[in-house]
Picture 1 (cartoon, helix red, strand yellow):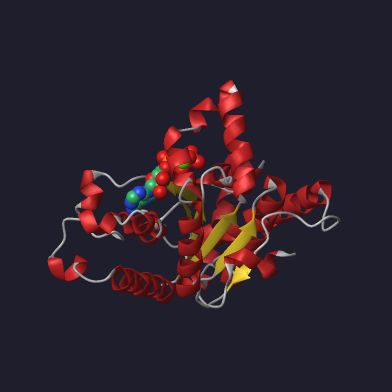
Picture 2: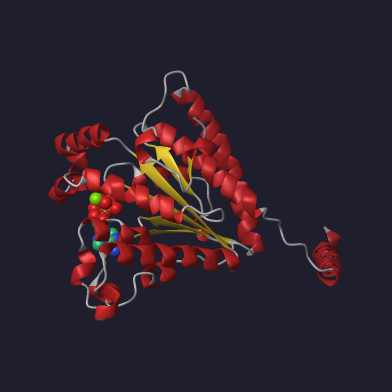
Length: 291
Ligand code: ATP
Ligand code: MG
């Protein structure tokens, strides 16, 4: 399985998507070697992207708890210039956020052109957890907005998300969505490790277990969401996440492909400015009598 196979389309079925690595597919060492190479190239491309300031990138990371979002961000972002990268976590919305439309906080986290924004969870929570727990029914919104069937409510949101991402694409931003696909068994192992290892206790919350009880609902909802919002300009990638090293390597490939697609070029100085550079060089060399 390579990163291109992770691309999910309108006919995507989650039960067919692998969570693990097939034997002999790739070794851990080989994946680490390729990832390091990818990240070196990503750092070069990011430098040019930033210098040029022509296109912005949003990487959306979605997953069940303990799928490895945080560590993926930590590993895949190494080598990037922090000046051009911003990570935003989307937790339960605050009172202020809930008083706005659901895209408001995402809009505030968008990058400038030339920069990369990593969304650790995102506005996709508004069609995932909000659907699984019927949260929208308690929202303070005009009845015309919530007094419709659940299906209608979320279909409208799918459309709004597609429109939002298209709008961004048409304004020189690329949105790439990644679902770290972990199995229920692996989640259990990682939860147990978080309980047993004192240094990992802080990562565990009993509410994680409550969400785990809705596993099947989440899978159904993820599948529907991915199908409805996988577009040519704003693709979804479903990455097997039972082995963190494999997931990270695949994410590095996706990031590299995304940055390459931007084709960033260092800006070329206008003729007059280039001539001026020569004059500046001459002035510097003339300092201290040309020593
Ligand atoms: P960790 O890996 O550290 O657990 P996390 O992303 O799960 O990171 P948490 O603070 O544990 O962070 O969880 C954030 C919670 O906020 C998630 O359960 C998520 O579903 C929820 N959440 C995010 N956006 C919304 C939203 N718009 N409405 C309701 N809940 C949301
Ligand atoms: Mg959590």
